[in-house]
Length: 141
Image (cartoon, rainbow, N blue to C red; front, side, top):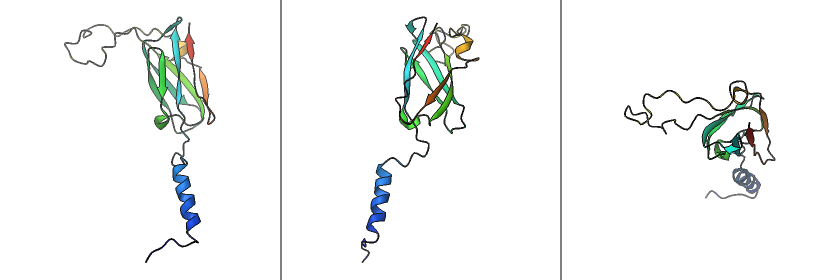
């Protein structure tokens, strides 16, 4: 008969606590969220990207909808500094419709409304911390 002996009970307890305590995330991912405005108005539809600068193993992005974005903890960013890039076209992206009979088929690619200083030439840096909250708002003039 295999029984839990008193000498093994503490080991079992430590393993159980580690599993419940979230030790299964070695990257210590954090939720990241915020708001993005362009000329004082919420960005209707866009993308925000976080590129790691400290060698951390995470980098991700999120869609901006009605001025808000969120990267949930499950896909979140490890603590460290990130370069931020923000993109927002003119709202005629085709909404994922790649069909040749799409209402936007044949139209020119939408012009980027966000200045290059906020995307291609961005020097925006934000630091994600373990303590949080990791809420980063951006007001683009």
